[in-house]
Image 1 (cartoon, one colour):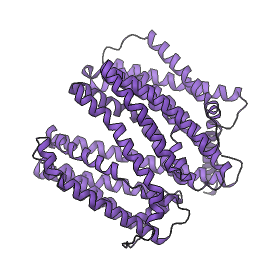
Image 2 (image 1 turned 30 degrees about the horizontal axis):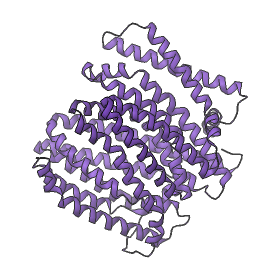
Image 3 (image 1 turned 60 degrees about the horizontal axis):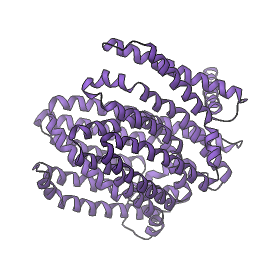
Image 4 (image 1 turned 135 degrees about the horizontal axis):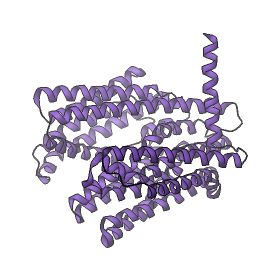
Length: 504
């Protein structure tokens, strides 16, 4: 990403890693979708509901107590064996403590929710917390080397075992325990595979705990703040508005995040170890950050805004007319999530530099801005007010993150915006073109019309965005940016294919 012979190899390793992770996500989503379809025919909706309540409580318990030890190990330039023992010991101690608390709260929470089945479910799920504490910490050696096939192995093995165990129990017993057993079996399989991928004999040791805790403590605090920040709005809506409003908001929020999340997560997962390998060379790290930022933004921005442009048609096609109120949630938040991809590389950048305290301070400020806006918006305008509060606070968060990047590696906010101006202008051209085309189209009346309209709008939007992007790049005399990086990667891939054909 700069004119250094080491960077192309890192770039290609990051690309290969992204492809492994993307393939894992695609296959895992396919297996999960098939599992849901099969289990939906064998179980009743109430079974899914009671288990979902237990797994949400489990997710919150894991989230607010996560020690981020894997990140601490990746940050260490050359971790010793004692560091791995300390990480394993800390994670096991944390999981045992959380499991005990989770189990102790199982029957009181079952009484609180007036759901007697919740108690045994939480007791069983507390076992999964312990299993998570036994995972192999040496797996981070793969990530430090920018090798990600093991992540593919872990993800797919866990999904397959979850699917097979859940379906087997459901076929035999037709019980909600199929979902619980599947979850635990999948986690156990991932733990076993982690030791197959790279051998490790764990030992209880606390000698290097301080080295790990000094890095991860701020991340743990930030995780607690973020968990409260992004769960509180749902709790407030559930308390002040009806269940339908909460349903629209929850489903819309999840759907709005889906396109940009799936488009960016594979690359984002590779950035922390990639940046960590460059943290002793500020110039290369700065160039790598700018390159990753422009690539992510170039891909995610049109996906997020494009999803917003056709959200109403997709909702009518897939979910039906009764779900149309969810459209506003999807349209507003999808645009916010698309803009936030401009700042996605900042988290791994700060982790690579060990600036976890600055991440906590950033998250705390965003929390202090976001929650009052959500409360006021909900009080004055209901669900619509919450949506507009999210849009405003999200935009402020983008500016705060861009300023943080300036403090971390010296890339001014103006430079970051100018570097991504072609993507912004191209998406504006796409929005204008698609909206103009929609005004000329008749309202789709049936499923065939909806599919045709969506296909036409997507095609026109994609062609407009790519065409304008290329024209702006050529007009700017082909500067370094996402266009040149994509061209370079395509050229490398074509050369490899050509060389293989000649060798055969």
